[in-house]
Image 1 (cartoon, rainbow, N blue to C red):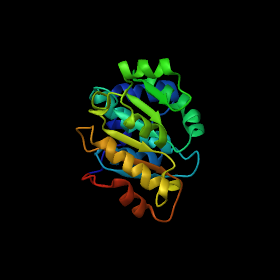
Image 2: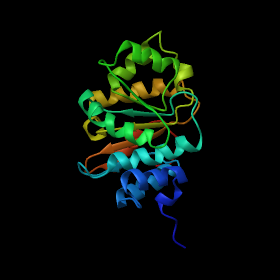
Image 3: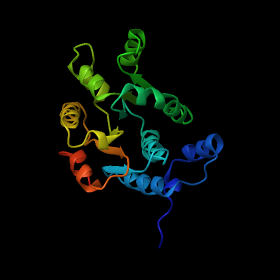
Image 4: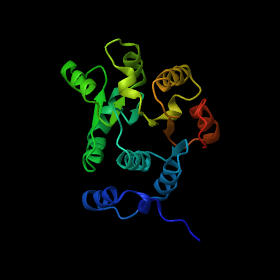
Length: 214
C-alpha cells in the first residue's frame, strides 16, 4: 500500500493556502521526501541546487507542525550564515507565515531596538537570525531566554555545507547546544545544503547529541 503524499499530510489550511496563494497542488520530489522526514520527526539534510526548492522543503512541514500545535514563544528558528541571505529570505518567509496566520521576525544587527523590544514582549512563531546574532541573544541579560525558547521545536540551518567541518560551524554547534538548554524539546535539526558528496557526514555533524532519527 503506497503512503499518502506529503502534501496531503499538511493541515487543510496550509494545503488551501498553497493552492490559493502559490498555485501549488503538489510538491517537487525533494520537497516530498523532505516533508515526509520532517513530519515524521526526523533530523534531516535537504540537498538541492540553487532555486531547487530547499527553502519550501523545510519551511512548509515546519509550518504544518506549528499550525497543529501553537507555540508558547518561538516555535522555529531559521539560521543563515550572513545577513544578506536573511534579508533575501525575509519577504518569502513573511509571505509563507502570513498565509497561514503565523508570524516571523528578523533579528540581526540592523534590526531596530523598538522592534526587538516588541518581539521580546510578544515573540513571533519563526525567528530568523545569524549564528552571531543568536549568540548575542543567548549572552544578553535582557533577553528572557526561558520564556522565549522553552517551546522551541525546530531549527533550520541554511547553507550548512559552508559551515560543516570548519571553525565557524563548530562554533554554531556550540551555540545550538546552549540554546537547547532552554528548550524542553529535543530540537529537530534541518540543514539546507547545495549538492555535496558527503551528506551522511553532514547529517551526523548536524544531529549532535539529538536522539531523533535521521
